[in-house]
Structure formats: C-alpha cells, structure tokens
Image (cartoon, rainbow, N blue to C red; front, top):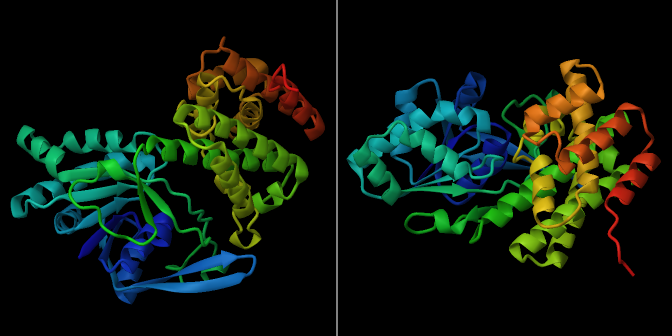
Length: 401
C-alpha cells in the first residue's frame, strides 16, 4: 500500500505522515523544501518528538521517501500510484498544487479504475469544494466525470498543535518535528469513495460540517484570542497567556459562546463541548510545547477573514441568537494587532475601514460595531478588568434567575 503526503511541513510530517506510516503505508512526501526532501531521501526516516509537561518521547517514522514538488512529472507519477493521499500545504498554496494533482489523477485514470481518497488537511471551510474546483479546471469533461466517480475529497479537522520548530527543539536533526500527544483525526465519512481505509487515530464522522466548525470556531478561535490578548500583555508564549486568570477567563468565555451557537446549530450536546473546551485549555497550557503567541496570532488578515475563526465564529453566534461579546473582544484585539503590523494609524476611522476590508462585515452592522467598540478600548490602553467588564455587560442576557 502506498500513501502520498503533499506537504512535508509540521502537519505533514508531524501528524498525517506519522498516521499513514503507522498504518503500514509506504510513504512518499511531496514538498518544495529541498533540504527536507534531500534529508528524507538520505535518511529514509525521521523522528516525531512528543512533548508534555511530564517529559518527551521520540517516535520514529520509518521507510519514507520524498519527491521535489518542482518536478511536476515525478510528483504526478507518485500521485497516480497512491492508494491514499493527503494535503497539508496551507490554503494559499492549494492553487499551485492543484495542476500537479490533476496530472496525477489523469495518469491514474489511464492505469487503474480504483478510487483515490485525498484527505484535505487545511484550515478552510468547504476546503473540498475549493480543491475540487481547482483540480477540475485542469481536467476535460470526460475526466471530470471519472473524477466524480472515483476521487474522494475528504475534509479533515486537524486538532494536533505543532509549534514553530526551533533549532533547540530539533537538536541537530532538521527532520525532527516536536508536537503534542493529541493524535485524533476526524474526517468526513460521507466524502470517501470506495472502502474507507482503517488508519489508527482517523475517526470518520457524518455531518462533518460540525467538526470543521468546532475546530475553527472553538479551537482555532480560542487559540487566537489567547494569542492576541497575550501579545497585549507582553507574553511570548501561549502557555504564559492562558496561565493568567484574566486571559483564561476571556478565552474560555469566547469558546463557550461558540459552543452555545454550535450546540444550537447542530444539536450537539453542550456537555460534550464543555469537556472539549476544558481539554483544549489544558493543551494550550502545555509549557513544553513552546508555542508562541506570535505564531498562533500570525497572518491577522486571514484570521479576521469573513469565514475564518474570529469573524466566522461571530457570524455563527449571531445566526443562532448568541451574543458574541468575548469573541468580539478577541477580534478587537486582533484588529489592533493587524493595524500595528501594517503600521497603520490606530484611529477609529482607519480601523473601521480595514475591518470592513478584511472581514466583509458591513461597517454599519451590529457585529462590526461591537468589534470596533472593543478595538477602541484596546487602542486606548484599557486594562483587562475594564475589558472583561465591557464584554460581560455586552453579552448579558436578561431574565436570568
């Protein structure tokens, strides 16, 4: 059995590749980072180091090789011969790899009638639809018909946290990936074509929209809120941020707002979401992981995007009648950070214009007004007690006994 992992970065090597290899697949990575490609081909293996406050453990992923993604022909040949495949390249890279995937699929159609499932490990709602469109642009009509019958585009929810790999973490081995122990991979059960393979740790679920939105609007959103508030406090690491009672309080309440909305939207038990939040906050506090606020809070424009973790969560809450007060506080802090990064004037007018530009929120909408009210407090240097009081008042629900 052969597996192809498109992307040999932190998630590719540090999670999905590890699952494929453990399931007995011959594993081929495709990547454009030449040192990584050369290293994998030279060594034929690499270590995944599991970090926790209790210690560390190296687990070796054996029998691997790699193809340089710039060699489109070799990459397509590898894809054509795969029994399963995954992508973990980042949303912005998908348009660049889609033609190569399409060429591999064409070659596959010429040699076999078997199905190929591609597990999409990207932080994007409807990532399967986005990738399908990009691939089909490179197929003819007959190939598109075969694609619909034989190619499964399977969304995944990536919960494992992998920090930026420092030289200290790698200890002289640039192939080493340090990560946490969490190893579950929820995937869209209904998207598979043919038989669903047994891969330890992979959990197929129906109604998969729930898992995608749970990941974005609880995990990613709570992580981002912790990061932006941590940066306001001058904290360098996520574990330091959530060790502060005020930041923990805000992040937890923001996550609970999303939990209320998702429970109403999908009928998910609120108790399960409550325990999920508690587990996430425990994992955020993993000091050994060394995850930085700068990494988690990077790329502010994308994270303030219309469907992404902050604004997407705000929209979800609004649709379900939940006031996203603490999420909006996090979004206000993210907006402040975004203007800071752009070296833009920290004024209400500039902030309103940029928020409308990156988030798609109508400048006159209640959602935008709430975010901008918290941005205003943050930009004026309001203390955390004032921020918490403002969020609590904004999210207050009348009639509570």
